[in-house]
Length: 372
Image (cartoon, rainbow, N blue to C red; front, side, top):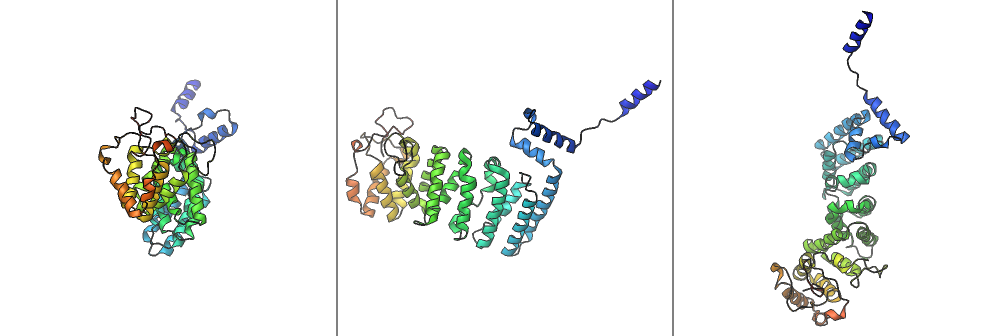
């Protein structure tokens, strides 16, 4: 009877789950021991879920929510600086947590502080806050959350003061240029900002921008990078001259990639340097000749004359919407820029190394070699 009564008490006893502190200590022991590495989370979402269950993260989230709520009551720019400094103190207090609570609201308030009408003091404090966030979340989480944190950063350079520009270039160099293939979603904005920095010819900003563009060409996918450069030439009138200068400086010589650094030329093929040559590249050059100012037209004509041989076939293989557009644009640009002599000396295909076929559906090796 006694044994039966004890068994009944054991069955009535509620099931006890392990506490959160015990489970977190178990994960810590496994990570420290290294023997059970297969049970550790592999994805960022699983790692973030572990941090969200931490007791410190709940305090971190409450304090961050309180700091974000103050931005609604800002009356002047000094209030924004004070609220940003409070956010920085909270981030420093919980520096051991590599996650940001309510990252959408945080990115929204930081974007609010990058308004071009605000003084440089607000911009500097905002960039310091970005530096704290990017340093703690790491490259993998930054590449995942680029859509949130890049809003307003790339367009700031055009309106930035001389105190803000070097800090902004430092932020690009440390956290964006080094992302490798992860930088592809924000390449158009980043390339636009760096081309804008090339406007200050002869300054340290110009040299740093060119160096970062070269690093992007080496580390990021070359097709995505060159599409971003040609896209800036096509769509952004404010950086057309800088884009043409960079293309002229880095245009590869010959059909095959160079063995080393050939006077600053990129060690890529012409096909990789000019992706979609019958589409985006041609439209970019035509728009530069038609809508650019005198200096832009002259630079575009020099790029054409030096690096694009005449077509090898009589019939031009242009897209349907571009037929009959390239030649008038060329003649009009030559007439306005007074460089008709250079156009008359445009080299035939035999004067330059034969480029590889750039068209996707070119059936012969000699087709698609130049600007058709």
